[in-house]
Length: 244
Image (tube, rainbow, N blue to C red; front, side, top):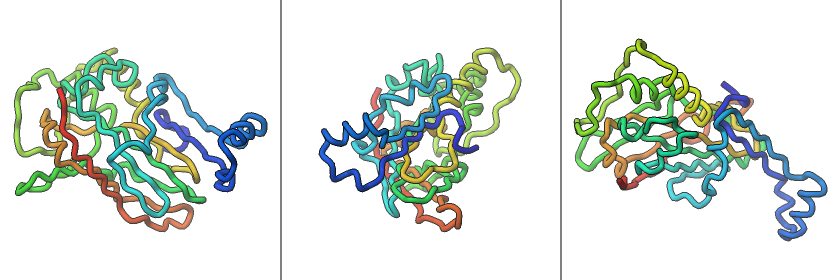
């Protein structure tokens, strides 16, 4: 993985000293001098990553050591209707939830992100805490298109890590869905200094979307580069009630 992976939008911010200018002067400087530099990596389907809500307005967040992490969980079926973002078949109907995660690095050093260790933690009152790992775009396509026997009305408890789905029966539709999801998935493992990136993480909730009211996003493994100094872990309280 790395800076050029599809699905990543990285914005590099201007030096902090420019904040003292008025907004009018700032606009003139940006236009005339190019003080603000945007690095936009836009593959096929990346238009879905533009026009997003300002991450500073989102409620689910954690911040320390000049790193802000914000999460936007998609907890209603309507948010999965954009075929350019998720493909033709709804992830939600297959029991999968997508969470758009933002990372904003205000440090002068890059930060390495271990995406494989991120977990969705479900902790209902008086029940055993459960941890779900993120799905790859291929996993999502398997569960959405290949698992024909899935019954969306079934509610099984407790939640568990999804099992492996057979690799047989992959079609043109499967390949198209994987390509679409790869374009919007969180895939960068290095966040440049004074930059922002975001993308989707996918988790299999087995249609138990009500569990999201007890959910946290746990991000444990981040480190500064190049000395590998670890950052303290991040916990984002999602605590949202799904809507139909």
